[in-house]
Image 1 (tube, helix red, strand yellow):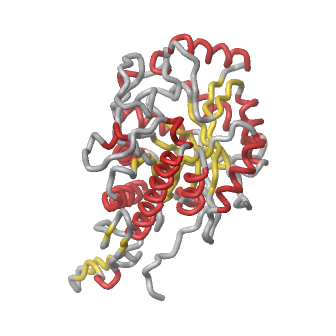
Image 2 (tube, helix red, strand yellow):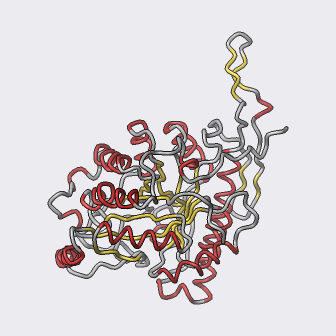
Image 3 (cartoon, one colour):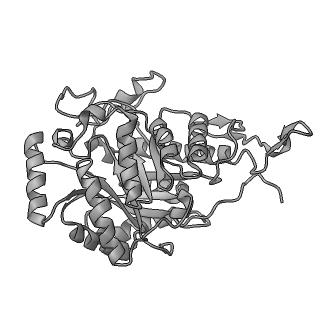
Length: 400
């Protein structure tokens, strides 16, 4: 896979009080503010002050649980539970920021693409072209029971490698691919100059430049057009997190931006090869970032000790799908540079504790990367597509 030319890209994943379950009990944490607009605004502004390209906002369809494949919610009371809607948070933060990309998570298994297309197009308009969306599947009975419209087999994590589990994963990501296709067609259903706004003639819109998308598939039949004019970016950035073959195919075939979870530098080339194999002839290669949970301190031992203290408070060792980095800003910059040289377009960092590890990223890690010539000293584009080195796509329905 040929990596797109350009500088390293840096994203930060914002989750509750931080990715470690004991983060909310840290001295600088703000558990009383987790469900306020000011909390999220402060975090995103800190990311923007550090020139971060984009932030992702976590979301889910059901209440958080330590056992996502369990049949019911867990009964823990020592964990952060509950969320604000990520798309609405991003829309609230957008007018209060100017450069950083905003990529909320949306569960596509239980929502309608027409509604999400409108919401993300609105976010792109409100932010002046800085919107994206991370699509996420949730084919589990506990989520489906919240709506009562669908059923899914009751499979655990260990069942995903069985024929039934493989079929569930395959179907879920095939549905997600169709969902993304509907999003993209709806964003194109208005041509860029469909709005005339001519007071003298009384013509606000050129109806010939609104298009039916007429999508007919296994999961969706959507006529269109959207009710929201084409977004400033033309196509807001579509992202997905991938751990295995089926989501790698979604990233390679449908998205602009992928997040992957290598645990060693040697893991990167095989993952990129799988993603590249799913590329069906896109105009620009997908940008792939490697995820890292980060616990940062003045020395490596201090970071290790800090993680140990967090684990003690949580009552168990922290586990993650991504590699957990404990160390200094310089050490993290070394690893980021190594992964970049191995072919990734950059990294998405998950702060273990907010705001502590976010501030370490923006005030220590970013200067380290800048000193090595890997990261800019100012924002170099006005849109999220621009920050990722992606061009603005032509409208598929526009005539020459």
